[in-house]
Image (tube, rainbow, N blue to C red; front, side, top):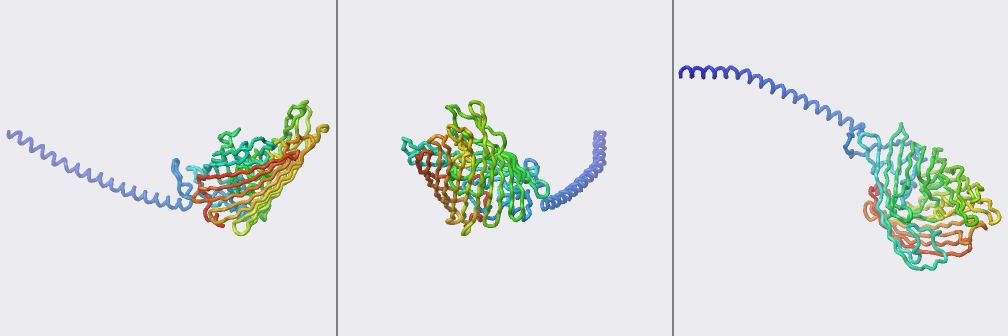
Length: 487
């Protein structure tokens, strides 16, 4: 027992002696951890300070893959005052239409409609700005006596001498759109833009995606499909109808275009475009085949100033056909298109257009696709003639208040026919329309419109048709500041 008690005492003394070194070791480790934590806190504070300095200088460089940047993205273009004056004047920038074609159109130097780039965001880890936008649209159309007409009101499609005289109601969402707008800075002041847009006017009246625009523009060099260089999207009336006035030059084509500034608000543009001749006639019951040996050449001169703009455009074309017997004929086509817009009495505005030429039917709204670019002179003289065409229109837009506006639009088109053409061939038409458009809240626009058309064929037979339309549209992104809508 005594020996056991002695052994226990010895073990106890050994534990006491060994505890002192362990306690000293733990104290040393805790002190080291405290020092490391202090250093880490100091480094974290330094990192936060550096990040704050970077954010003040280059906020776009803080984007991390998978993150969302909520700050306003930097503008890709830094246009000089002369470039801005040449690209887009104040009146052009403020001009607003329901079709929003001015938003989609390519611009000199890729100048934006709004220099603050509302709706754009920076793609994480890149220098690319992107705006995804579009609209959901519904149309309710009432035709009192022309059940055969489609979504767009085209006077040339009004049936003449039809036995049908029944009303028709049609609903459509085919005017809805979806688009993506990419912009990338390039060098000191240049930029690249890629624009893609679809609507839902599928073939044969179907509601299916249809490509409207797909083009890329590096500074002032453009390739892809967009509005022809022969037209002026800033001189369109403010209409609900998807087709618009019958006399406007309006078509989207594959092309290669180069634009350049001339100083003093003036600019010029030259393009080679898809010819796609619109020729349709038969010889002894056999249809001819249109041929195109060269692209269309289009030019325009434009001048912008604070209260409006003027544009003079021209086109030069080679029109050809192959007859059923293999013989070929061709003729020269040309045209001029003078357009412009001006602000009057505040935000109210007037737009005008006058086009004349030989073989330009494919460019004009009411005659596009009707095969009226060219035809033989007579039954005995089958030499090809480019058909003369005149198209004129005007539209007045009036703002009742900040959120409500109306437009009155008139148009006239006339084709000079040859003796070869059949009596029921299109000869001329007129168009008139009036509407009321209301922006009750945010991105929602609603409107009502009445249009009336009249058409006459070569024989002198004619017909007319009215149409009533109610339209509602919701834009995915409201990127036009409200203050710009003030009259």
